[in-house]
Amino acid sequence: MLYKFKSKAAADLIMLEPQGRQILEIIGKTPGGSGIVTAAQIPGAIAALEAAVKASEAQPPAPEGKEGDEDEEQGGRADTVKLRQRAAPFIEMLRKSAAEQADVVWGV
Image (spheres, rainbow, N blue to C red):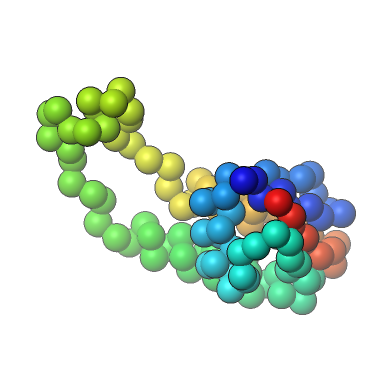
């Protein structure tokens, strides 16, 4: 499943379900088929996302995997995409929407 976020002030943003759900939970919205972040709610949503990013970066990094680690055995990479990188496009959408007093809606 994909989440598709739309705003009159920004280009559409598409996220995979786990990442979209995480973003919505951080801003206090119930993940689901559709919803809205009103222009009045946007400053709080930005603050919540920025606080979550700051908290995630304050955590110590995960220990390095040992040789023969499951990720390496499956040909995967041990590095991961940080919350900052996942949230940045959505925060940008929220900022553009706030500047134009536009709501952000989502659907699946």
